Image (cartoon, rainbow, N blue to C red):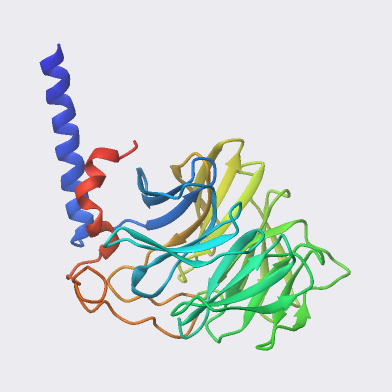
Length: 328
């Protein structure tokens, strides 16, 4: 009986590894995601539809994550008031900034040399220079949740006090907002989809997604009753949204095809709150900026050498450990 069990485990592991190799070298298609587990304090590598891998333990609860230059994983520790960068190739962690109150959301700025971080504990948005960690105040005023740039470099945010989507100018002043006569219900995560040229905001309590025109004059509602709470939301820039639905300690990733209004259930990931899509290949180009962050230059630059195929270098970096930690 024990031998049969071991054989079964070996075959299952071998089959999964073959599937992983096929994904990494372009034979099949999969969506790759980096996420944060706010309950257990983990950075996660997620491959739809089944794989969930712990790639780092943060020591405390992370609450925001993005992909930065050279596929660095930039994340915020809300409780500790810190922002960190994790190198997925050397598996090393660096502190970018400390002394914040409750860093809640991050966006990479055009040019990829700095990030903006909304700190809901002090109702500010801070700018952090990635090269030296220099921190300055970009905005002070309302409680800001989601942050996103469109492809023209315009900055938008979910304003929790105005219950609106707002637009900032380069000086950090609010210059536009959705109508105050029609307040949004607890807007939380925010993303921009280039294919439909629109903003999409998850409602934290309303079980809906708001579709907002980039001039902020038109707001429509997409019913999305998949879970009591909708948290992180990202776009692949091609008309597909990925949304985290939270029900107690259980979180599930849902894919929503905008043009066909088709919903697909992907991974169930306990504790997942925020996530970022991993672009294929070595070059990072955020769907919300108009500037690429540069290509991997090999071992000297990032610890990884670019290879052909559609799979990300992050997946290749963790291929050796994924086989032992896959969650089905």
